[in-house]
Length: 69
Image 1 (cartoon, rainbow, N blue to C red):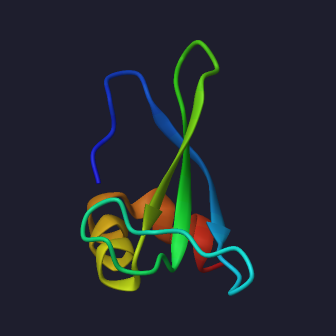
Image 2 (tube, rainbow, N blue to C red):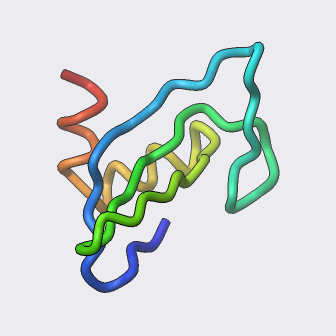
């Protein structure tokens, strides 16, 4: 998972089986979506499977704190 310059993580969403999403890195069913906001307030969601979500947590400690309180 990469952030564009000026973006920061604002939230972490859990996917339910009734609303599945696809991991943006590998095409597997998404485990969580990371909500990212730019400096101008533009929001985007990055869907990630469990493997790629855990990799993102190691790159962005704030994500781990946000999702595993």
